Amino acid sequence: MKSDGSPIALPAPHFDLRQTLESGQVFHWHADGDGWKGVIGSELVRVEQLGETLLVSPKHEKLVHTTFGLDHPMAEILATFPRDPDMDAATAFCRGLRIMRQEPWECVATFITSAMKQVPHIRQISLTLRQLYGEPVENQFAYPIPENLARAGETELRKAKLGFRAKNLAGAARMVADGKIDLHGIRFLPTDEARVELCRLPGVGEKVANCVLLFAYERLEAFPVDVWIERVLRELYFKRKRNVTSRRLREFAASYFGPCAGYAQQYLFHHARKTWKTRAK
DNA sequence: TTCCAGGCTGCCT
DNA sequence: AGGCAGCCTGGA
Image 1: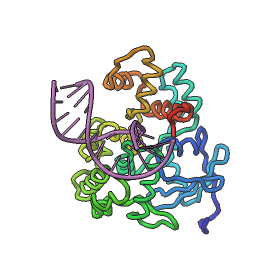
Image 2: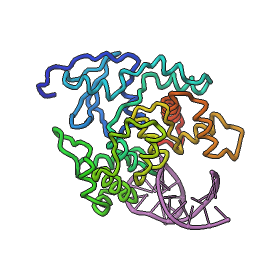
Image 3: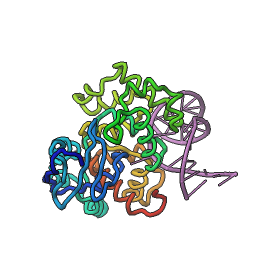
Image 4: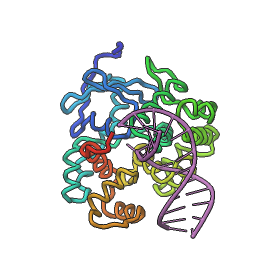
């Protein structure tokens, strides 16, 4: 580390750094010795967990506290979960996993590029975009601002291996850069209206919008349904039924998992991905 | 080689 | 409203 002062110990009870970073919310953090490094905004941050504390540079204390949701009242959140054996198992397995607070543009852009991709690919795309279009931060790069991706355009982005996602990312970047959508203002909208706004962006449908609502706008009730969580819901809650529509699954999720459904979803998702050995990459 | 992956979109019925 | 193919690319 540079001379930012020696790390301080930030209290982090009921928190698990590794599980939080490996639960498919963010795709650019990497292990650094016994800790992790990643860029938050325009800061390169190193975090290391030591028991129920986090070692961080003093100047990153507040940033880390906010980004990792250390203010979340976990006991209260867990108390809202439905009680059934599968939910209980996921909750025990994921103890300490927090929903993070990401910067909206980075979050929406990353999930636009995640369509039909496996995690290593999403990480690769994030890294390539940062290296080509992001501002340097020490020896790493910030996520590119919308203006840079809009200027690059679809053709250039295709060279960064984005495939059909290039058009969507370039289009979304253009809308944000031109002020056609106000990602900051969305913060103040009710969740349903915020979702409609986000879906105006190319490449953003209900799933990506819900990811952004959950991971960037603190809407803990937002419940992203991807192919994985569909498998989980069918396997755990509709085992013997066939012909259950996606719509029916979403209706079930909305009523069953309660006001922190997004948290519950993340736990079911992470538990399944880490324990269902088949197919997971 | 062939197949498909953490989704969206447009076009069908 | 619900179903379905196509979209790029890389890895199994």
